[in-house]
Structures are given as C-alpha cells and as structure tokens.
Image 1 (cartoon, rainbow, N blue to C red):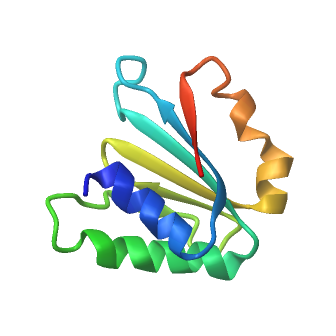
Image 2: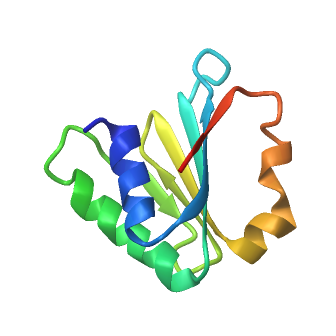
Image 3: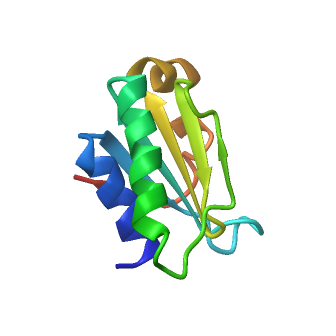
Length: 109
C-alpha cells in the first residue's frame, strides 16, 4: 500500500466520510497531496491517529507532526501528504474546501 491508501484506509476503519484528496503536486513546495475527512466524534478522530501510527510504523513512511490531538480538527503531517480530520461541525464551520476549490480533487467513497 502506498501512503495515500494507508491514510484513507485508516479513516475508513472508523467510518470517516466525505473524504477528498487534493492534488497539490507542483503547486505547493511542502506536500503533494492534501486529504480532508470528516468524522462524527472526537473519539473517531483520535482512533484515526492511533490507526495511522500503527499502520505506518513498519513502512518507509513517517509522521512528521500531529497537530490538534484531542480537538475537533486534527492535522497529520506525513511529509508528502497532509491529512486533516474534522468533526462534522468543525468542517462545516471552517468550510476548508473553499480554500482548495481551484485545486484538482477526487472524492473517495
């Protein structure tokens, strides 16, 4: 599995939804993809972090930093991919998709 597949799989394990993958390659010098996902509760977001930590520990990938643990918006920096996990309310509040509306994206079911 590549890093994108691992991250999406971890989100799906806790019934994360509304998953969007933005292609940032060539448009951002720091990362190639941004993944946005929603969860119903903070508990689900915390579980995603645990699954990702376990899921990549025996791979070539690494987590550079995790921001917002135990908050309604968790950002996981995995070098080439950034994963932002929001509670539904937080995602509605920030409407982060508006920031990336000019970027190519794909919806993951």
